[in-house]
Image (cartoon, rainbow, N blue to C red; front, side, top):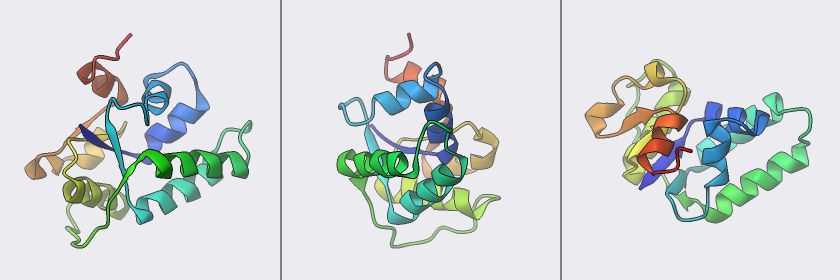
Length: 138
């Protein structure tokens, strides 16, 4: 199963160790699912994380987290742009990666931002719903 993580899930997972987002982050790289990344999405992660990171994380910590993502994720190049499909161009970038990589899900808190992704065979689901689908809801 392949997924693309929306930036809001990463932010939530780094801010609290209690929620579904943290659980999803803790499962990255252990074989439960394949995380998919592109260079543009990685740059977005970096920009947003360094701007909105929790106070206990330094820029160096953010770099280490992103380096880990890069080391375990499936990297995908985007050769065709599907834009505009969604309201926000940043969300179109996430959808394009999901389409190009053959991902099953976009894991996000902003389901309404991904209305239309289903016409590409991709479901936008919350972290909690994703955990339930992979049998990790505790």
